[in-house]
Image (cartoon, rainbow, N blue to C red; front, side, top):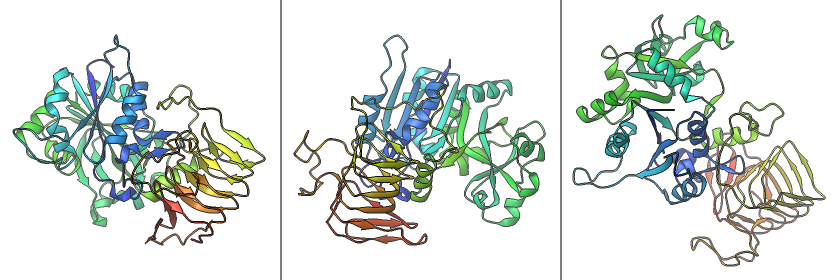
Length: 428
């Protein structure tokens, strides 16, 4: 896509995804056994013909930087790139990013070096497929200074979103960020023709919400950020532009989900194992790109697997696995039973690297992966975890939140953190 640069907001501390974000930035969290969260948004850019991409981050960016450098390498003739822009101190500012708009403002001198006509602003922790070129074409056809990608949400989700009202031409006339007042929310009921367009019944109560995907005319973006000290796009920049510039909308008719919480992240992974998943991974025209690994095919010995994803380099021996995601280099030993488990796998094979790569990971006699005669349900197992023989992890009450010695429970989902060691015969 000519004359467009994309800027992906890498997110803040990612506290809602803790402990998965304890040692990594939110966009670097593994997804579907072999990807990272950031791969979804970057792949949308590449599949849309956009090959100039900046990723803004400031927290625990080392693993994200490493992944991007290994995964996204363009040839010298395309002039494409995916580049990390971390928060940096300058002569003018020694502060960290204070919000979405402030992050773009702080890195604007890098971005506008390319003198593009339009700038695409994206979030790095959403799950969806979109051809941004169609949105940009619509933005230009509407002669808009700013175009928002919008999505229809139900009443339950409306209070967590930026809601907007549009006129008959599709231009924004009112915008409010995460309203709590029921009367205010009701004012933002979506027009009937938009509900019909995506096959929804208007009587069920649908609201037009911002997806956090923006196309700005680059000059307007620069003017907004240099003349205004506002820190956030949703609560400050966008409302301030209503009535001053044309703000168009682009309706997204496919799947979209914010997977910035443990429960939403877990659900998205488990749904991917279904017969007809809401977000199908098998989409030949719109692949998800990632770091290519030279790993052997998954090895399945005397095991039973049902409705699951199994990544390359995995070794399953005498296991029973259902409704689960098994990540790269996972090892599951005889007698293990896994149900609704999202296992990230490992960064290395034990025999390949007998010494601990990360000094924060304790030395243990328990081997990497899952031991013998283990039963695990409704659980996320982060990378390089070691689970001893005869461990039992049962499903917890859906509303339980608890911090254990070597595990966490969030919304009833047990999370084994990166590099954790679970002793044999542990009962959780």
